[in-house]
Amino acid sequence: MTVHTNSGLNLYMQSAIAASKTITGATNADPGVFTSTSHGYSNGNVILLEVQGMVEVNYRLFKANNVATNTFELADIDGTTSIDTTDFGVFSSGTAKLVTLGTSITGVQGFTASGGDIKTVDTTTVNDTVDTEIVVGATAQSYELQMQWDPSSTAQQAMRSAFDLRANKAFKIAWPDGAHVLFYGTVGYTMAPGGEKQGVTTSPAKIAMLGALTNYNA
Image (cartoon, rainbow, N blue to C red; front, side, top):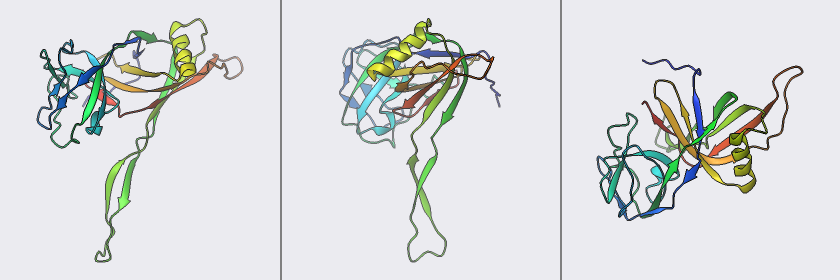
């Protein structure tokens, strides 16, 4: 078991996103193969999927894997094998966009994940003597960040601009051993300063995820 600590982390925000490439097909297989003619991706590229039908990958960031001229797969948590989409929803349409995570966010004093609580529904019938339930999903997830207020910071300016324009952005939190998480969502940051007396001036930020978080162990 690897124990991670919140020391030496790097946080990044999307600095660029390429034009969308149409996905014409995605298989329910192990591994799942996505078809997009002349997509131009390379192994390890971070891509944003916006997909109908196969909801499990919609509004999520993945690293491209086993790339060929007209196809690609999605790297699983180990970064080398590809995701099994056998039991995912049936793809109907979608796009992929190459994401560049080039904006380094510094001065983050703390970050807190919230949401992701498992949702269940009662499936008990009149024939049962013990209640039953099934898992149907999870609540919306978000990250709250406590920023050291710095109006001269280009990253904080970019976050404020994203908030003003209601522009969705991709994010990455990376640990020193290579483990990282990727997520995509709406940005909340007014750049309003505050804090305790004689303390560091801080400003709260929030990223509300549009899709599920993606984990990589390296």
